[in-house]
Length: 142
Ligand code: 5GP
Image 1 (tube, rainbow, N blue to C red):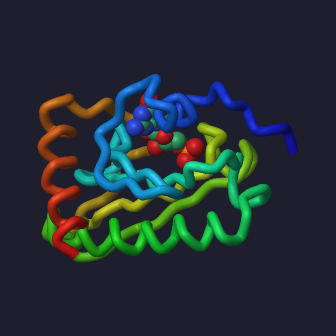
Image 2: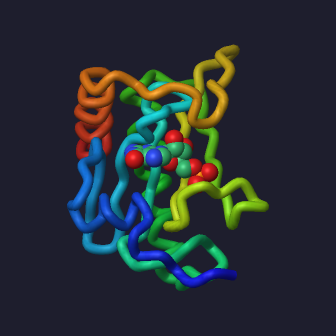
């Protein structure tokens, strides 16, 4: 497996070099909206520590990312009046991974409503901003 590349897009977001629609942050993890959402509220949860994917992540970071994933999923159920949540996580190119900093996808689902294909359409900034605000508030409310 290749080494971690500190210039990947998510590393730049974590360093504050690129913007994101943040919904949650603590000392070990960051969660922000996917800019090409497969459904409204599609969120990515990342460890702050450098890791390409689950293959090189520390078990503690992985456990924490999934704790945060659960919080985001619970918030998304409320914020988007979802009927369910799809969780996706890809490892290496052959496993479907495109950005090589570990991330977990939290995708709110409505019954009967299919997900858009991956990376199909960039969402409008005002929609992302509004969805991030709603989701951040629902997560903070617990
Ligand atoms: P994966 O590596 O899990 O296959 O896919 C990477 C995900 O990152 C895709 O869902 C894509 O829409 C999302 N993505 C790609 N570039 C950016 C970006 O600059 N900002 C955000 N927030 N998401 C991105």
